[in-house]
Structure formats: structure tokens, C-alpha cells
Length: 122
View 1 (cartoon, rainbow, N blue to C red):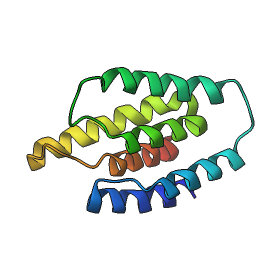
View 2: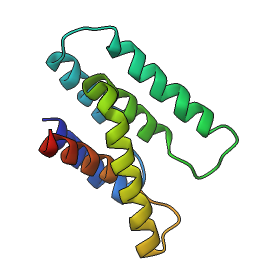
View 3: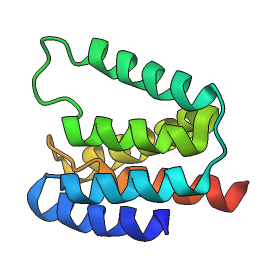
View 4: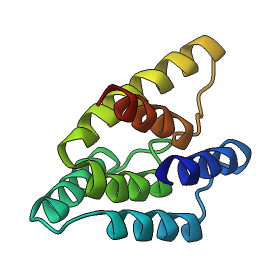
């Protein structure tokens, strides 16, 4: 179900560079239903938030707020593996940007690639 929601988000992100809040909430609900509570549910989302908040201070054209919220939501499900997902997603986005000579890239499709890669390999 997570991949289906991410695919829908990807399509919308490609077309509009926006991530609808309604889909973010749906993703959060699906993930919360699927997990067992642990302290890591709080630690990884906070860590992701602070890392990207610090990276985006006074920076324009960086990762968008919707992308950060989706990363925070995904970190609840994938916990430490979110860093693997971010690495795969970022490398994929950079390669796409270099090959296509694009300055602005929708990031959710690359998060979908990262999550899919992680699920296949784990």
C-alpha cells in the first residue's frame, strides 16, 4: 500500500512539483496502522526533521517541505533504513538531473525508487 501511495504522489509531484497533504495523511495512517510502537518511532522522524531543517536554512531551491514531510512519515516505518532510502533517492535524483540537465527535480519519484529498492533488497 505504501508503494501505491508513493506512486500516486510521484505522478502528482512530476506534474505539479507539489505533494498533496491528503496523500501525506493517508500515508501516515497506513504506516501507523502497520507498526508497533517503539521509541524509534519518535527518534528517527525528529532526526530527519532537524537534518533537513538545518540543510534548508537560507537555501532556495532545495528539497521541498512536502518532500521533507514524506521523509519524516517514511522514517516512522523504515527507521534507520531511511538513511539508505535517502542515499539511493538522492543519488538517483542527482544522476537524473545531470543526464537531463535539469535544475529542478521532483523528489518523490526518487523516494519511491529508494523505498522500492529497499523493499526488494531486504
